[in-house]
Image (cartoon, rainbow, N blue to C red; front, side, top):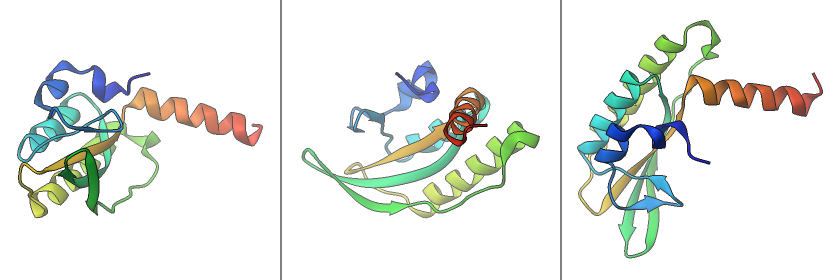
Length: 124
């Protein structure tokens, strides 16, 4: 099953032909456009991973580290804040064409699905 980010044509269009385990990968500076498009489409970028590509191998170079409180109060602000942190991470860590960025993301729909799964796990 595809993640919601993978169903948005404009985001897929800026993705690199390289991917990690089937997840979309983005080159610099295209990743900044992808984050902008996520914001427009209500998708929160929860984290960014930067990989160096060596042939068929992907070596983790750096991962973002930010976390925001529960988004149920205002999903739009949650998206904007997360994506601003993601953009800042990318701008502070620009990389050449031998690197790709992978965005861990969630739409409101995906967030709600996870919350329902959690209820099932806890028996509530």
